[in-house]
Image 1 (cartoon, rainbow, N blue to C red):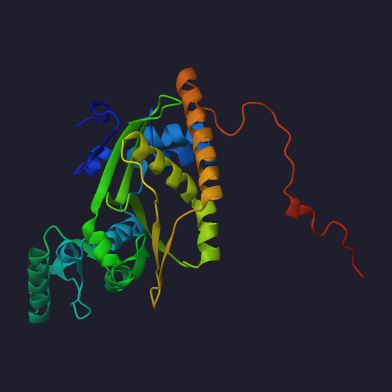
Image 2: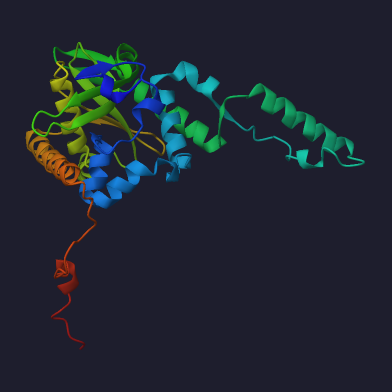
Length: 307
């Protein structure tokens, strides 16, 4: 399956290997963030060197586990496994020892049996396994009210949604191909949505996270995708759950001013990408010798003198 085969469509069951293929001329929310906040040169390198990514980092593995526990709890225990706390030491390096004692042989047998029963599963630490499970349970138990006074738990909403919905479309202004992959989509409520694991899900803290991680730009990117694909949404909420007990949940969507700002930043990013593609030039931070001013905080103590 090639991204170029489709025009302005919403697809299901697109393999991760297809969706996450990087192309300079196909704009994703993550790619636009790199291009706009770092430089076009960083974006070019990111596209052309995907194998340099540490895709198996603990954070990414945990993020997928959290999503699975929330959206597909029935699969969680079959996809992930945790090493029991009473597991013996892994002594398989002594398998060919001349005279292994009975404890060593028992440990080798235990590890062989454990690995055989967990083939294909992803290993998590006991702490990470429990954390992902508790976060998923908390999100699924969370109650929320939708327009029309429809009251649902998170689990009821998520189970009614399509998961990992993939959008491919062409941006009308720039002609650039775009893509997005929403965690959930519910046509009845006209919403897409994204799950977020956070340290602090309060109003003030998540507002800062929106700015820091450009979630308002993500809202704009996905919203434009749904609209261009013929299924406009009325909301793109972020369902966030805190990473520590009691795993408090909150659901937020950006207001009109934040949404307008998100669309403006996205437009700036796309126009920058369009120019780079047309000129086949991917500059770094500067192209000339430029003057640098210090940030305001560098002058806070300028008037202080020693007593």
